[in-house]
Image (cartoon, rainbow, N blue to C red; front, side, top):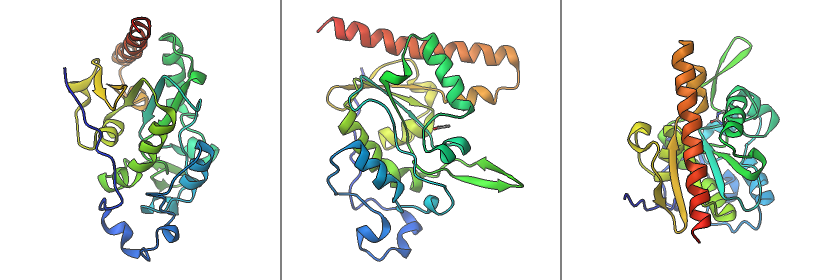
Length: 237
Ligand code: URA
């Protein structure tokens, strides 16, 4: 069995060049590290004001996690996409549609799940009228980890499902490969286990239909595996 230690992001975390413009006053850069947040509503406002990296400059708004105040299952994606950025809600675009379908097929009710992202602002490159998704870099993931830690404290999930390598990187504090961790519960935090699977956007990018169907089925299996594990665990208590 593998044991994972959550490395809590601290105020001293280096954020690279993004913070060189900072005045050193945390409130001036929307930096809530160390601040006590009383609720997920407070967190929502604080995420929107966050300037810990440069992504806030071009994004419409910060998109925090959403769902029940306490939830057995928390899903963590990469970052809001174009539609999420405009709507202010996670996983409401094309990746969200696949995720919803897969959750349903796995017998997981989305409204019972807390859905979040490793990075809270949309990173993109303008291409004509379109905004093309760009992967967040390590500094941006690190700058955002504190928010995820706060969400975990509020929600206290029994399982966290990392959707893709960026989510796993953020949760674990170091790079992992999805294939190495996929399908196995990993002890993570006091009473939480981590599951790692692929990101639903990955499924959208597979050009071959039969390969796409097979990968989608595997994704559903991963979610089912996590749900069954949780049921067994709850029954055995
Ligand atoms: N992709 C993500 O990782 N998160 C979203 O909220 C939407 C797309």
